[in-house]
Image 1 (cartoon, rainbow, N blue to C red):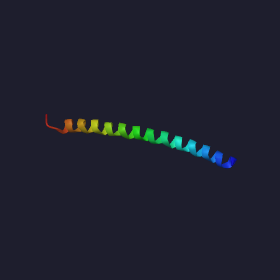
Image 2 (cartoon, one colour; image 1 turned 30 degrees about the vertical axis):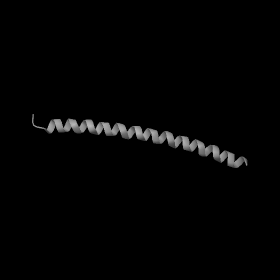
Image 3 (tube, rainbow, N blue to C red; image 1 turned 90 degrees about the vertical axis):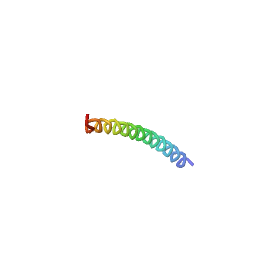
Image 4 (cartoon, helix red, strand yellow; image 1 turned 120 degrees about the horizontal axis):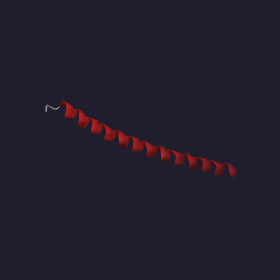
Length: 50
């Protein structure tokens, strides 16, 4: 009984950690996307004949 309780606790901690990891990954992806969009528009602005 005690063993399964410990297992449940560790699983809960792992789930929380992975959730935090997923969130940070999502934030990173979003910032990368925004960065790519801005640099793309800058490059197009440079390439476009003025």
